[in-house]
Image 1: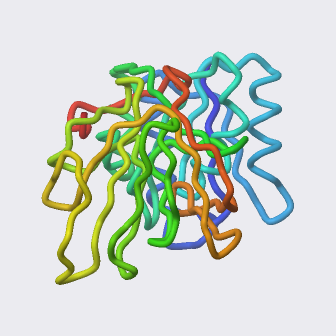
Image 2 (image 1 turned 180 degrees about the vertical axis):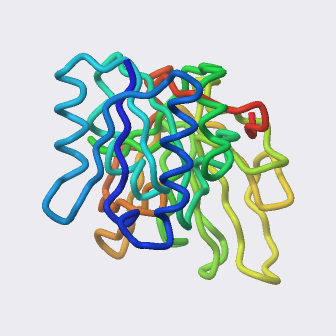
Length: 247
């Protein structure tokens, strides 16, 4: 059984044609289900919780990266499969999963190619794609070694979906810690290198900042303050993916 949650920003007039096409295509493919369209008075997190209580097998999020991060915490500890129909800007997660925009995503749903993916977790907050930290954060990798940026203009990223040129995968039981210098900087830290910086494979690490608590940004939407324990949680989420996925 499918359920479809349309984010509230899709009430804008410019999306109505796409929504009509999507609803028609779902019916044609025989994968229609209960459709709920969010408003400023209807909360998508609560709608997701209620759909899970009703026993939905596949919960399809219609929206963008922000929509996914809203729904993700509700389904993590359930047996529900996540599906996506991307509409609107900010589609980093959908691109990585190989899901095309708009009505074409319905055909991806109907093919039902499933993958069980790892998630990252910072303290009690999960992330699917990545975590970005300021350059002055120190990362203690299980007490074996510490990583920090040599460049104050650089950044640290912990990726579940590593960028092109790195060896990691979102189902390999590890996260990739990527140290990227600012433009024109020199002096890489030891570690495997990619065109984007030095790369360290981790399963658990402690993030701290000598200047006091700083924000870590999860999936570009949610923030967690240091100190934070960041770790991989293996095979936590089942998701429908497309053939053009990045892994």
